[in-house]
Length: 465
Image (cartoon, rainbow, N blue to C red; front, side, top):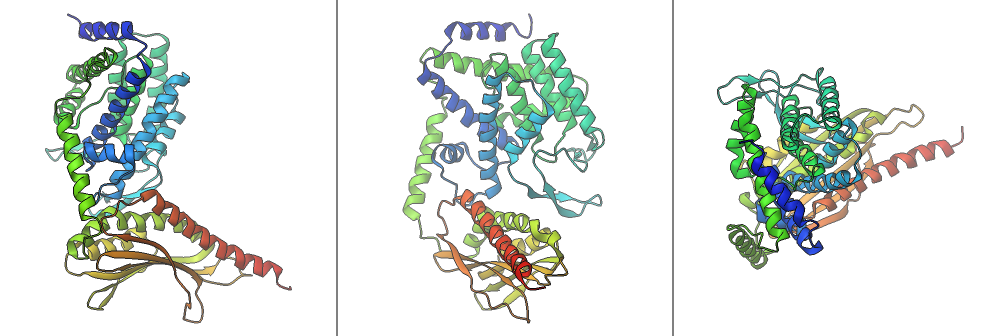
């Protein structure tokens, strides 16, 4: 019996039930999207639960204590899914440009991620969405051996070959559509063209192919991560059938779900009620305890991991835009604990060094921080006509039940700053953080720095010769 006999039968059954009633279609598409967003990210280690993913995407609620990056990854993946659906309807041909644009949607703005040097030392790596990898991304296997993906130099050519192969196969098919989607997924993973997000991208592009051939979205469950990776490893060893069978099983599951929806039957899985009930209980608990958290080492660590680390990192990337306008630039951190003891971080040009300092301060459990300053120094404007130096500072002050943020930008001269900070943010410790607001605030800070520089340039231009 052909591997595709059952899948072809289910596909034919679904086609006879199409088009679905609008309400049925929207209901099942919402379920597919939520499941896809949650599972594809969870496979890569995202900490948000299915209930927290639903809460974020449907109601805009963030999960207290969960990392900012995890929320951004879910939102970016959802935007990529919606863009993919639009692309499928457009019938435009698949191109490398579209793949890079999808990757940019998926990951959003540039960010730093933990990495290792060639000598095995911990460091941070800048991820630029939409750009092919700039350094090797080989991995160590469980046996301690290195698994090699395409090299940096090979990647552009390998990606061009992949897209050409796919478009030729679409023009003159030689394989079943599901086999084509599975093969594309596998070839993409073997290239690993980006510095981050390759697994999620491979599943997005596999679904693009399936959707274009009339199949519903196919969700690989996080619970099946081990058999999924084992099937990929078997393909690496020269046996592609386990991976193909794995994909076929998941496509069949999606077809059966879509058929149930088309027939007006329940699409809830047995565990769905438990998940929804757990989410409701969590929301009630959060509402009851809102604003009651106090500032202590546990709250401090949770706030840093869920918000402050991202805030500082994103601000550092915004401020780096101005570095080439000055001879020298530095990032500096200073903190003070509740015993009024001050301690300073590394002063230098690298954002990762400043973040290492703040991570240690907030997460080592040895100090309760009362305030922290994250500031930027730019010395000697590159124009010889306009000699000045500039500073910008973000300060967070922590109280028993809430905290506040202040921002200022100023000219650095005569050994003193004399600047007046502006209060820009206040929150309790378990509030549902609006992360987009933080990004907007950082962008506004960068604009204030620009306005200051532009005013100095205008002042010089208007001065008598």
